Amino acid sequence: MCDFCTKHGEGKKWYLQVKNYADELLYEELSSTQRDIVKVTTRVEYLDNLFENFVMPAISSVSKEQITSHGAPTSTEPSDVLPSEETTVASRQIEHFGQILPIEDAEKVIDIASSITRMACGCRFANAGKKDERYHFGLMVDRRGTLEKFPDAAASLEVLDKEETKKTFRKYDEEGMIHMIWTAVTPYVMCLCNCDRDCSNYRNYIQKRGTPRFFRAEYICKVDWNFCKGCRSCMSRCQFGAKTYSSALGKVYIDPTRCFGCGVCRAVCENDAITIIPRHEDTEAANIWLQDTTK
Image (tube, rainbow, N blue to C red; front, side, top):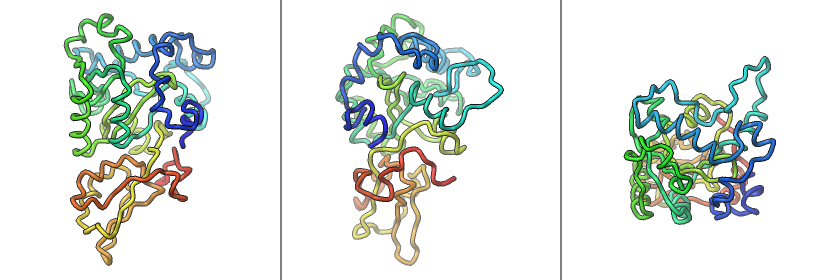
């Protein structure tokens, strides 16, 4: 399992632990290490800053230049020496880090959340110039008083019930969008997002082959060649380059070392040839969580 499961999930999936959604985490005073990285004293302050600088521009007339780099360190102090990749990733894992979820686990998270608020995505505004694209689902947003603190945004926020949210996620799954869960000063769970190439974290990590910003899923996808008809529809859905095609065999192969386990390829397979299995069951993929093997 990923490092977060060991540190914050007692050996189980960290994002399915109710304690990581608790109000106590919102208002507790952060440790000195956490404060040095995020520059605030509580998670609720961090979330207010993120909402103001990341969500508000996507639903208002604020210039997109005001959007901060999603997931970047908050410090603006200049430095003569750039931190190592290891140091950068360690800081991100403390401040704001994600993990890919297949639709099954995304729905389990939706069941845990006491409230779900659909809102505009700052990434789509910054990268595609699209306002009010609602791929971002905040968890427990109303519990921290966000609607009262940002009245200008309140009309643009949709508080959804669990079934509405699941229906929307299934639609995005069929469209090939990757589901990700994110922390706000780990281990507090902040939101569920639906991501593609217009997601800043995907662009900077996968497309530009930068430092990691999210864990791979706790799963990988496998193709059953007894059912694969070689239509290659699944290849167009894979956003991680994990699939190859054998012309001689007329079958698709998924490289377990490249698979991020999002599972969205399954939605277009008319023969149900693709399944997900726990990552630890594949010896090649078992310990691959952050590395980009395409480098």
